[in-house]
Amino acid sequence: MKPELVLPNDFEKASALNECCLSCLNRARLELSRDNIDDADRWVTEYHRCKRDLDKLISKRKQYNKMLLLSKDLKRKGIKVEVIKKLTATNSENKK
Image (cartoon, rainbow, N blue to C red; front, side, top):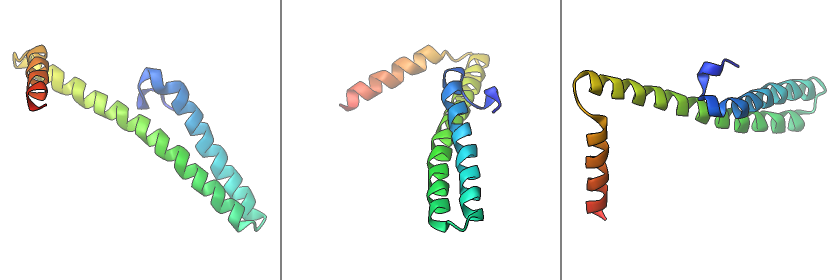
């Protein structure tokens, strides 16, 4: 698995999930070759669970990258991100 797909703190978990996906697909293929359709289906279901969790970590990285680009763009335009954070926090408190 490419490290740049996930945040550094998530890499170990993502690698384990990636291995889980590969293992599940291999097991599903093995069970299918043995005509154990129900067992193969269970492994496919487990694959989907691992893949869903892996997709969440990849999505988290993509969101982080978008926020980083937005922050850089705002700074380039002379807008202080800290001010936006304070305004957002103040608005959130006022709504309560």
